[in-house]
Image 1 (tube, rainbow, N blue to C red):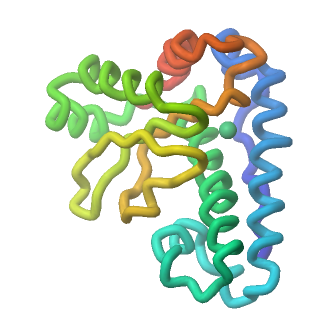
Image 2 (image 1 turned 90 degrees about the vertical axis):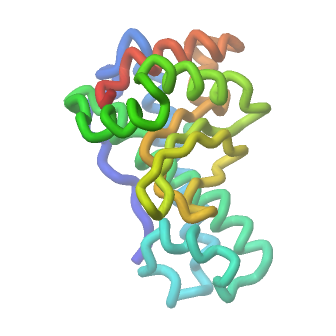
Length: 193
Ligand code: MN3
């Protein structure tokens, strides 16, 4: 089965004024779609992999029987597809606070404010394109990661919980080079914690 763009559960302007409608539209219909198209192209000659969930493709990336260039494409575009699918969900303005997540954050980081400080620092300092991640390891413990490009926490067996896209395409129209202002706005949109 070919991968498809998941439905965006809210309008492009739903995150205004923090994330503008034009950025949302381009990010979702152009950038996310391009990752999906390129992932489908990379999987075209491996029918046995097309029904495997994308997170499993990433968890098992180095044992997949694929050509090296296709492995790179699966890493980049499979990652891009999954990362953005999660990004739209966690920013849903209909989300409520996730009490379990807040409780786990308090246990690991001491407070939500301290967690935000550390996560913001990673997002701010990520060199070039990439993401800041909060992810759970196999035991459920929370970890912070800064990862380049579209690399996913699944690549090292972690399950992503919160991800902040700091590629310039995520903020350049509204915030230009001011990544810290975009990160600040992103926290205002996030309802989960
Ligand atoms: Mn993006």
